[in-house]
Each structure stands twice: as structure tokens, then as C-alpha cells.
Amino acid sequence: MTSNIVIVGGGQAGAWVAQSVRDAGSTANVLLLGDESHLPYERPPLSKAGLLETGAAHVPVFTAEEYEKQGIRIELGKRVIGIDRAAQRVTCSDGSQYPYDRLALATGGQARRLPFPGNDLPGVLTLRTLEDASAISARMQRGGHVLVVGGGWIGLEVAAAARQRGMSVTLLEFGDRLCARSLPAFMSDYLLNVHTRQEVEVRLQASLDHVRAGEDGRLTASLTGGECLSADMIVLGVGLAPNVDLAIAAGLAVENGIVVDEVGRTSDPNIFAAGDVASMPLSWHPQRLRLESWANAQNQAIVAGRAMAGDCGRYDDLPWFWSDQYDLNIQMAGLFSPGRQQVVRGDPATGSFSLFQLESGKIVAAVSVNAARDMKNAKQMIKKAKVVDPDALADTSIPLDRLR
Image (cartoon, rainbow, N blue to C red; front, side, top):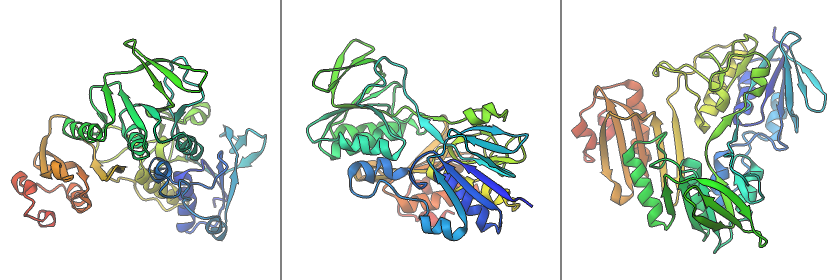
């Protein structure tokens, strides 16, 4: 019998591991150790309602009463600094130690900071935690100027929020298009047009050289080409570094994240990992993937938590992600790759359309803009791997559910 289950990480994945252990019927002692001072919370609101101040930035995954009802003990402000696999215990920075029979690592990641001089100055910010969102929101003053570094999802959402709150925005992207890692060029061009129409100054193939602080508290950013820009704050949105130090020190297999199997088990059969930090196999992809999304943090953690309780399923979900920018809700399913056939359904000029990628006649990836029903159908069509007629797919007079 597993008597002690310890979960390291107080984010969404950690919370769902704990809940899923109970859902699987385990009566083990469940302890969640979180290094933040808040109950585990969802991160999407940080860059959306949190920055826009249209809703709560802190959205707990579960309430304190729910944890108590489930018999889940939570210790906040506890940073785990070591794992003794032989003795099966973890050690925290305050010297406290906790034994485990099964251990889950849901340590997530931290926002990357580019190594330019001045990257640690006040006003050079990243967005990962509740405190980060609060610091950025507090500096979003109407009439001010923000320099956003990074043209991925976080950078674009920060840019959109800043414009909606009356700031001028300059966005620097090192690559030659926006969201190049996750979207095809068609969508990159669409997003560029969206932000340009909102008067965001987008600089492609641009990067920072260094930043200086002025006596007035403003920042001066020098670009690699020599140009200088003045800003009230700089927000870095250049990706996430998975927190794998604990796993490496413990001798676990690590390869762009903690290596796990289809149920979340690491190279140590008593240790599991889930969420942003886990590198996993998926039946529909030839290589291991580490997915940074709300859906993955929840659904993979559910499988891992149940497996820790002895109820082994398999995590094999399709990646799904969403972003809110201005009046647009953008949803994406699957993984895009160059060279595939593409079909556009609807008119991008209307602000509601979908783009599909096909391989051997089957939909393998889709992105929708203000077309949630398209996305709902697209997910089913991808899962069923059904061959579809591209002309029928593009024809908005034909309901997508007829093609499923």
C-alpha cells in the first residue's frame, strides 16, 4: 500500500495530481508542497483578465475547503531543494523533510531572461506568477510606453492588454515572423496585421543589446543595430525554462524536461512528473514532446495522479491552446508543420475564420479565430483521422459536423 504521496509544485498540474489521487480512490496521505504563498492557481488569467483588470488574476484551481474535504494537506512557501531517492524523502530550504512512497514533480518552469546587460533592472519584467502580473499591471499607465520583447503568445497578449489600457507599444521579435514556433506563416501574417491595425509597432528580426535606467525611472533600451528606445517598462516574453534542477540532481532522466512514460512515470518507478516540466511520448508524434498549456497541465496531471494511486490509463491527448487578444479568441489544436496542404474556411477580413492543415487528406492541425464551433468539430476530425474533401472543408455553407 502507498501510504505517503508527496507532490512538489503548487501550480495547476500539482493541484490536479493531488485531486486525481483521491478521485482514483486512494486513502494515502497526500501532501502538496508549493513554493509560492498562494493556493495553486490557473495561469491563463494572468495575461488576460489580470492585465486588463477585467477580472481576477488569482483563480485558484480548488478552494482551501475543497482540499480540506479531500484530506489533501498543503504546505505553501515550501521550496524543495533535494530528493533522496534511496531514503525516499524530500528536503526543503527550511530544513524540513518529508518521506514519500510515491513522489510527483509538477515543478513547471520559469520565464526566461535574456542575458543582456540590464536585464535585472527594476521595470524589466517577465510574466509567470501572480506577483509578475501585478507588477506589470501596476505599470500599465495610460499614455506610457511598453517595450515587449518576444512575438510569441505571451508577448502578443501583453501587447494587446497594454494597447487596451492606453499605452503605446513597441514589440521586438528576433525571428522573421510572429509565433513562428507554433503557427504557419499565414497566421503569423494575420496576427501581424491585427496588431499593426491596433497601432502596435512590430519590429521583426530585432533584438535588445542592453538596457540602462534613467534618473527619471524610465528605461533606455539599445537595440543590436544601435537604435535606442525609451520605455516605462520592458516585458520579456521569450519562453519558458522547465524547472528540472531537482530531477537532474536526483539522477532522473532529463531530455528537454523530465522524461516520463505514457502514465507520467519517470526513470524512477516511484517518481512521476506532469505538466510543463514533463517530456512525454504521444502516439501521434514521432518524438517526445513537452507541452506548455493549460489543458496539458490539467489532463496529463490527472493521468499521473491516478497512476500514482494504481489506476493506470494513458495520456495521449491532442494539444489544445487558446489566446485572447483584443476582441479575438484564438484556439489551436494539433501541431503545425511546414509543407502541408492548408485550407481556409471563412474570411479573415471578417474576424471569424479557421485554418486547417491536412496530411494525406486528413486534418492534423487547426486554428480558429472567433470560431469556437469550428474548433470543436476540428478536434473530433483530427482524432478520427478521417479523410475530408478540401473543397467541402472550405465551404462555409456545409456544416463541419457533416464532414466528421
